[in-house]
Image 1 (cartoon, helix red, strand yellow):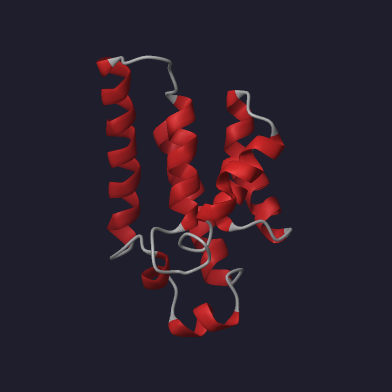
Image 2 (tube, helix red, strand yellow):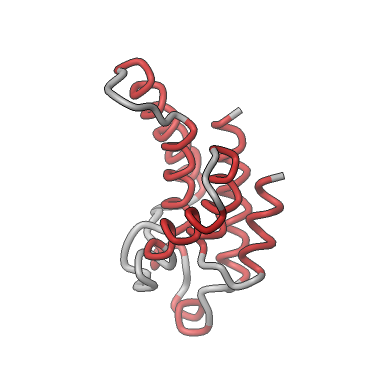
Length: 135
């Protein structure tokens, strides 16, 4: 369900991080507006620069954080969260050399549109992995 909503938001023009976090964050009691604003700066490799971590990955990590969110220090919960993060990242790295936006995209895609088919394919793939690690 969240994967489909992510793709719908991406098609509406939300950045990659917002697409993921808005679709998943509402499952954790956050409003759409809170998710939208919190994820605004992290799309397109952070600030649209394509130079940093892919926004899809940023949004997924934010969702994982809220999935395990707690107040105060709990080493057991922190350990479970960190394992889930490593599982998510390791699974994506099996198919990609890097999780840096510019490395995922080709030069042609970077100059044409951040909403390319390549981006949409990665959004879909990462949401599938996110669903797996959160189940």
